[in-house]
Length: 167
Image (cartoon, rainbow, N blue to C red; front, side, top):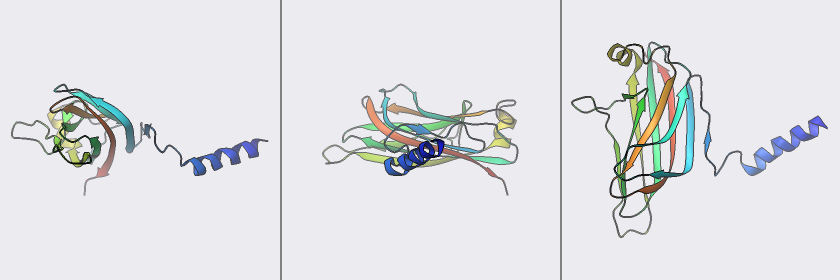
């Protein structure tokens, strides 16, 4: 009986395609995570956490890589998106250390919505030196923060993060 239940479960994963078409996450992860949502509300001119995940612990001699995709921004709408880890901005940053946001601007009058993707990174040793006690040997709480540029917007999104050894 147990073998039949296991076979039915495995078969249902293959037939149904696993977690397709649903909010899903692999967080928390030891050295990486992946998370997505099929419906997130992003308010107008107010920062909100769109997606988040956790890497179990920051490690010395590592670079944190974060990638995000945002889609389904309707024609005439726009949004700004940026990650943070434990409240620290990732690179690239501006002249005063603020994290640079991915801007998705969808021109009006086109028949389909718009999407965007971006790549950010952070040297964990440098971040720990600038913010002692917040990165190395601490859980890395990574958030994708968004805000609607011209009105509240509805999106789907994915967020991935991983640690890589410095060379």
